Amino acid sequence: MARIIGEREFYGLAFGLNAATLEPRPDTELLVDLALKALPQGGRLLDLGTGTGCIPISILVNRPDTSAMATDVSAEALEMAKRNAGRHGVAGRIDFVRGVGSRRLVAPRHSILSFPIRPISPRR
Image 1 (cartoon, rainbow, N blue to C red):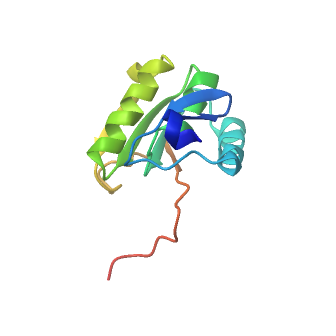
Image 2 (image 1 turned 90 degrees about the horizontal axis):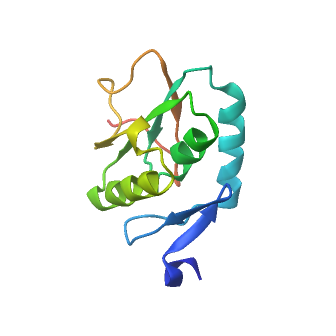
């Protein structure tokens, strides 16, 4: 049904979907719960493979002192995440970066979040 209407609820917020994003899953809300408890005040998080942006956006809506960087390999997914961030009033606190997470992106102050759909293995 979410694909037909073009949006899905996650953590009490509506998130737009497009062909490049997966539907946010209810079990991923546990990651948001854990992050909200663990993130330090004024923290900054890094979301790898952000898709709709539901994870960092949900955290930022609930933690006005927090900022984020969200990455994805898909330009279309990032565009949807940007729209979702604007819709929920947190666009000014998220930096969107196209590509796979790299050491250049990660600063010591980042809390790294990722909920991959398949196991991640190192490149050989």
